[in-house]
Amino acid sequence: MLGTGIIKGLAETARNFLGSFVDKKRLVTVEFPEERLPVAEAARNFPFLLYDGSDPEGGLRCVACQICEKECPPKCITIEKSKDKKPDVVGKPQFYPAVFNIDVSVCMSCQICVEVCPFDAIRMDNEFELSTTDRFGGLLWTKEKLSRPNEHYLAIHPTEAAEVEARRAEEKAQAEAKKQQPAVSK
Amino acid sequence: MLDQLFVTLKHWLLSFAPSVAQPAVSILLTIIPILLVFPLLFALTTVLERKTLGRIQNRYGPNRVGFFGILQPMADAVKSLTKEDVVPATADRTVHFLAPLVLLAVAFLPYAVLPIGRNMIAANLDAGVLFFFAIGAISELSVFMAGWSSRNKYSLLGAMRAVAQMISYEVPLLLSAVAVIMATGSLSTVAIVEKQSGFSGIFPHWNVLTPWGFMGFFLFVIAALAESNRSPFDLPEGESEIIAGYYLEYSGFKFALFFLAEYLGMFAISGLGITLFLGGWSAPLPFLTFVPSWAWFFAKLFGMIMGFIWIRGTLPRLRMDQLMNFAWKFMLPMALVVVVCAGAWRFLPAGPVRWLVSVVFLAVAYVLLARGVSSTNKVTKRTYRFAE
Image (cartoon, rainbow over all chains, first blue to last red; front, top):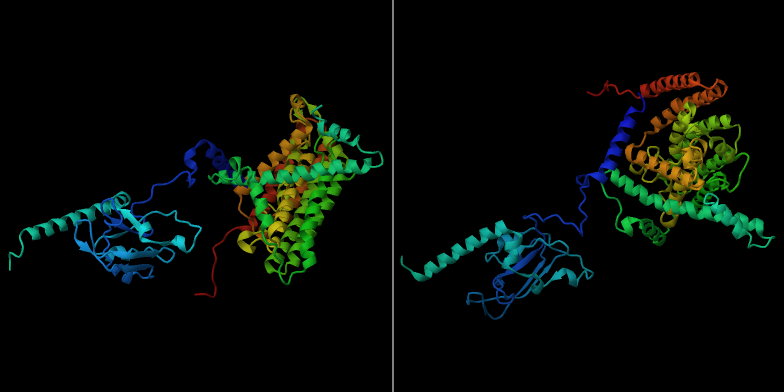
């Protein structure tokens, strides 16, 4: 019969229309700036540099080995190695990056820098509200902007960070043990 | 008092004008409110439509600009005013420029014969309904001007579709109005409303409450949807097929003018539907007559607009052949049946027999004609003779 389908359809849309006022579950829209969904744990955006302790300058794990700079596929990392050595967080003298820049307009978030880093010094951040009015300066992140404490890493990627922490603790314990009994086998 | 508020206000304002200028001032005082109220109504309708469509699709709709998004049309207006006005290099510049203006002028003219309230009509023409349809036919010309002058195949396709559709649906639109004109015995919109303003018991004498009037209103609304190029008859625009149809090559404020004209056309034809079938400005129940007549008109207009939005949110677009089949195989014969039924209603003695005869007559006609339409597009299994 002509028109029955139309009436069924009209009833369906009327149900949607009225239901959206009664049943809040129908409205799935998350009104973004005011409402937010939790960011997924595996979410990643751009890299950041980790530092231990409270001093971003002295505690930086990066020793300017420049592996990430060489491995970076779009070549967005610029590192200048320091001429001198500074003591790191355990007091051992190390090179440090005099300049560490990431051009986030070039970065493609591939995470290769994280995978190649032998010092667990670079990790992926999950911050995504990064718009800026300065498209050159605002998108070239310097060492100061990139440095984040280890606690930040523990907070945003807890599972992954816990693994890294456990591994680092084990390595440290092994190193300590080696120091205690030097060259037994020789 | 409240009923005649605007009429008294006009006469009061008119008393300040010198007697020489009074005719001109009187005309201005009639026209300016129409030119203000209906575009404002358009602005409100756009946001109402977007919010309603949103709710139908379980979204919020615009709610950022102003209180609950009510200032969204202002933001849209600023946006369309600041946009670049692009004219294609090969376009016929004069016609391209004139098309939106002609369309807008034509969109405003039908309001001259719409009785918005008691004694509230710009021009009480003896042939008001005829005037309305005559003006409505010009809008086809301006649509074709827009499509032709753009020198774009999509524009031209859209314009050709628009003309084909509007001419096809003008016939049932007119014929369903003819039934009312037959029942009233007048082409004047004021006379048509006054004929419907009485009550028998609690029921008003609206045409829609008779069998032929109900069917006529049904046909009128379908044809009105097609005339105002609204979904499901929005083939001339056809975003997914021909981008934007006849106003594809318009940008900025000219585009906004097309939009305005489309909505004004929708309000005008809804107003005519109200005048012809829903008793114009008359109250639906006898004890509600204290509400001003213009308030009833706008309440009914709001109801019609909501209905149009509801239909837009429900139905997908027709195909061109379905559109034409429906117009010529269903709408036109059904409108003729309505005309015959309206005549029979006039000459049959009042009572249940008249109701029974009319309802059965219309129902049988509906079922038979509906069968004719739906049998043409039966899906059969496709067989390939040569491809293997």
